[in-house]
Length: 474
Image (cartoon, rainbow, N blue to C red; front, side, top):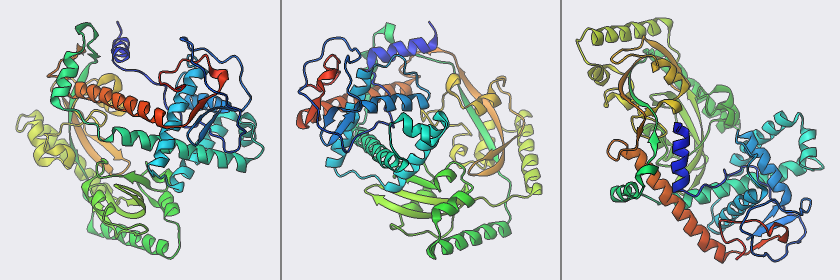
């Protein structure tokens, strides 16, 4: 049985799978009331026989769901690369009912979403729709809208609603934790024949040498950041300047925007500055391992901060880059000659703080352990290590990091793990993650059941043949 099939068999046997949350579900603000009392669904989920064109098909609290919402959800799922051929309209409606319940409760719990964040997402959505359908006119025609302003206003509400949904879901599971004993109990409850099969993995270590930057170049960057700060204080747009000047390519399209909390995986220096600022305040230039930054805090919401930042990486000379390559080449030779182990060389000579103390061993950002499954490994990293023999070291690799600039690295494979059935000791981190996900699903199911009983809900009789996992027709 192929690996993917084995894993999916296990997941399906352990969890209730829900349809992928759609970002582009549509709610109405001006439709007439045409909802009839719900009737009990049949056992089998089928397409509704009669559909009112763009009529209200369900109401959850303050939110209506239109028939056209389902069409738009299909389009959005397709835009994200998901196959929708086997997803029925009843299943789509079930997912939309969940979303509206989350959004309705988020409002009751005073969860707020910033308009700036919504507008940025809206711009991305519209750009994709135009690309897929050919023009803005065709987008309006597809969604049966008379003009662009009407469409944008409605899309704004849609995105805001969906962000409320996401925040409510996060709040529900935020406090859910799993203990070692719960993990053990979870593992023991899995029948032997249903134990998950994990793919071939490897552990990888690296040593990094960053070229030295002159003090003159550092001061040049600091001066420019101070100038940008002064321009913004005089009325210029921080967002526009971030788009133009930041060296953080990941955040440049959004004008340097990030939303972080204390647990967000940012370096300590960045978070310390971010959480020391008041709303509207701009920091002085400060240094992290990535370069020099300034931060402007836009909004503080409880434990979260919405901010924009500009990163500037001091330029390195060709001579400094050459010296870095010579240094890492010498480190490689010393390891291969047996003068020092790779791990000891990483601890004493690597410029990468995150891996230095661990002998250069990389942490998988998806799983937070040291194992990289070959089928899920970053393509660039895979290409660098896939053909390495045991104990071998790559040639010096010039890495142009989007945030940290150019640096040289050497990589070795420290351990290889073949495809295997889950083992409690060897795969504890993965098993713990599966146990946590199951506990989170149960927490969401419990919350949903309780809130359905407390919330005004009506389902159109045209969808009476739908079979819902939750008791929407209470």
